[in-house]
Image (cartoon, rainbow, N blue to C red; front, side):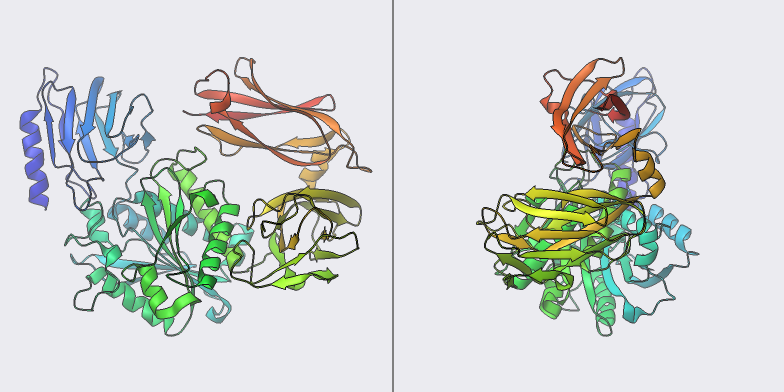
Length: 627
């Protein structure tokens, strides 16, 4: 393999010569992939990569390119706006102008050497560097469970609080890089690991409740050799999980043995198969009820919906569906353990999420954190700053019906309640534990029946606060819906009551409460002089669309009082770009989309300002727009 790479590079060195000296193409390094390069003018270069099942991954270095316009066309890939780096550490995505179509990138470079790749590489060397950083961490255990076809170690990381007995924990498994080109999945997985090892109060608690077991590279040979989808023997490991022991590739053989040893003693509750896909959205592969069971199908949707509710980067419209096949990892889990293991493939894109956000490693790190929080909710783990109150712990008054049907999919836990509308005082009420002072976000979830009310009424109360919120229960089923933000000046409880009034069936499922800030911040936010707050937009920077959230308090005694609220966007010169809101609103939390594609005139990349006007006062935030 190494001879083949050097031979290709030798040909390149002969062919590419110009008056300024030769442009040198190289890929003789960990994860590099380059087969051949041709040119007729030393400006426009045509590149072929070593292909296996597909031609996709490329990663190579160009030298002698400073102050030089170079145009590259990759013949056998499918890259959209790939990445470049001058130091092989800090990577930048080519702009739309620099990469106007698939497999093409052209640019005048400012340094002599530049690396280019399909996406930011995550090599075997990088993995070992990360492992070296973690080896002295008290919450990490490092094991080798076997060796690959070329004798590279299959390294497993176990992340947990080892002082807490395993009998009190949920086991979560994740493995990555079955397909070597799918480097975004590694950064997504790193985000999960980074958050669970952080000092965040919820993460510290989760280490006592979750044992996360991670095989970062199931295919280290393929990664090192710069493959796209296969191992050193050109076998797709993803489709090798139901072979006989003698036929099974070493990487899968050792992984299955390791998992069987764990499962002989403990249940694995969640098993994630981490991948990346060419499509411009993240997805889950949800397996049909006909190939699994009605119950498992419902639980898959519940798991995916909780992930969606904790992230801006994935939504139900992004989910993918297929019949479960026995040769996939999920098929092996299902064949042996059925619905005891929530086994799913999780795919990140190489390019952008469905909301238009172009991915980078910082976004994928955040996505990893959000994935852990979704797992937390699926497992029913509660913390005082982030918890769910389900129907099991609610007060039910009146003739509510209980459903555990698998014919309905969009509800939390194992059941939901429903009732036909009436004017009697029937209700379901969820009560929080006693909460410390601070600001809290209050969410509700419901099953979206076809006959559901479009005006179901929730009431949110504390000892000194009341708000009524009406929602359309024909929409957003199975997803957390933000009802209100509640500020608690002293220790108190939040109660959420759903009334049996409306124009259709009322469904009661669960509520979620999340701590959002300290009392000091709340006092400043809702003081007599400053009774509103404009939050930082997210994502920021943004590519095409971002969300802007603000809170207002119109009247402490009567929160239903309405006041005029104006939200505008300005450029760096103070010119008005858009009016996003100009309306009379009551107290509450509001979220507004700023969608650049809907502007009457296009805008350029740069700094913009969102300004909120309320009661003759204003607040401003800075936003960064990147095309």
